[in-house]
Length: 166
Image (cartoon, one colour):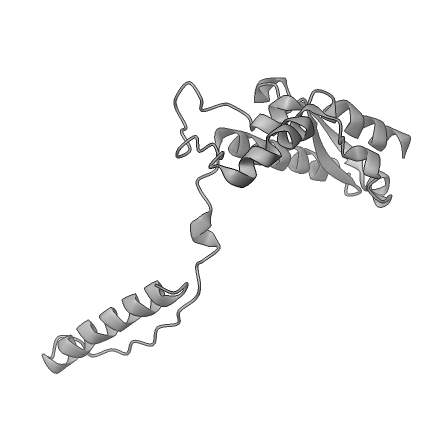
């Protein structure tokens, strides 16, 4: 099926059923479907516990910043590899974000990049993806962070240095 054919197919089925009901005197309304392509939405999944904790925390920081009339600040969270209860939260001045992102922020010698580089050739010729399955909210793996986040040891401290140097 094409990307938007599911919606059109459903609209056609509903139209046919309503036409049948109208002819039988069981329906007296109008039906004007508007179809949209849900191609991108269907590729996503439920948020992980990490996603939920992150969104909740960012929202909480934003609420506190607003309540304290700190409109020139943006929520900031460090310690993301730790459980959410151990994250450090702050408000980072937006003025500190005004500088361009320096290339040094991307550590090309970091563990995640080196792991990717080591497996790049193998990934071109074999099925090397890892699929942990659907998001689980209650299990031994429910609170795992992504492998690349777990590999990065100094990403939080580097971000802090950039913000503090601005």
